[in-house]
Length: 545
Image 1 (cartoon, rainbow, N blue to C red):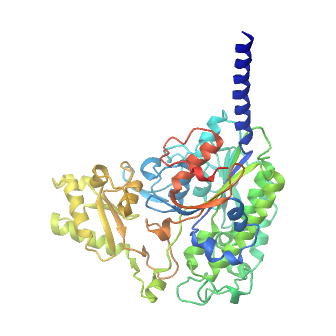
Image 2 (image 1 turned 60 degrees about the horizontal axis):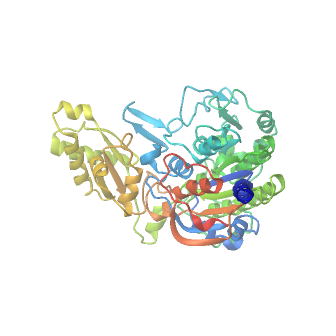
Image 3 (image 1 turned 180 degrees about the vertical axis):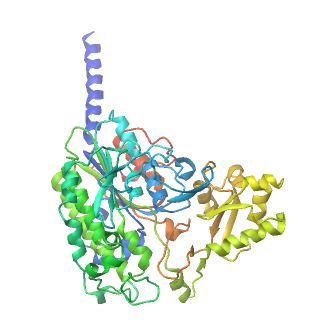
């Protein structure tokens, strides 16, 4: 009998000890860092110029996935952030763009607009936001649920969507920057009734104004920026009030013609300002100090603004990343001191990458092009006029999706699936269109690889259009030949860094292909919590110690 009791006690002690050990392994704070429009090759292109404590630190001490991709189209900011944190794609989470045509409301909508709520922080309407259009839970939601709503979840980004969507439906707060004449961090009554005192104090400290007093000059001798094309070139868009897109930039004199405080979004100082606010949040909310795991989601948005304006080969983008490297080093040092070097886990990734400026590629005789949206719409109307004797069958064309006018089609006794298929068959003859498939095809056919597979992952039966298009390689929808964009399912838009670092993470790298949706289940496994409810990613076992 005593032997049985001893064995039982041993088993219970072992189980309890294992449970305690598992609990002990959980980080006090998880930090998600999303860099807006970061191509993977920014890690390698500028490697020799990065310091040892920023990107190089987490590459050396953390685990880097060198062949990580988005497995869906479109590759936009809202889609990217949502896919990262839900562990699934738009076919499940429902965020199919930044803006999209709502076929029920018959108008274009914005992913986080919600007029049921009011702005917290000023009298404007910039805070009328919420995550209600996101259909699935996030890893941040699941952490809250697992801890019986204990632990804090905070989202921070210059862009509202980049702050709101990552922290899900249960966040304590999401903060974003209201520029123009305000220059303050704000929130929504979805989260709170009043800004915390630390936010009010930060808004009053004059940092935003001080950043606008400083000129944007090259961090190092610009002649050493040999990884980029000439500073003065025809592929970049200058700021309003400046003739050429060249260093230096007198921000104090340019701000009035470029949205006042909004110009802060479009220069590297915007990333520094975001970092400053993140540090204030860690201190103000005492993140990483309780008996529960907290989560801080940070998105650095200024990289996207710079990329759009100047392109991925510009000296401006190189300087932006060299400065961001210093901001990251400062943030990592702060986390070491405030939370403890082995008490936090972070991941760093991007919401999408970007294509080289098509006009620049054309100058190198690389296939690239532009799509004029008005000309494309006229071409589609010609198709319907030719085959169905009406040019009123199209309700909307946006985000490379065609929405049919079902009411007009029914009035003409036409079959909308026949109309959709004819458009798909004919629009493929348009010079800059590479693929065209109908909603019916998306619903009845399973594509297992290639661009059609990514298009299918981005197709949501409830919200998406009736015909889905993919442009040719390096082809963007734009009326300007300056600057660049993103949104496709090609590698230049899908290939992004994913780096895990900190508690529970080993050092190393992998060249295996992983998808962006694998981040959330990997974190869930590290935290020993349930996956987000739409997750279809896999656990990246290689990253764990």
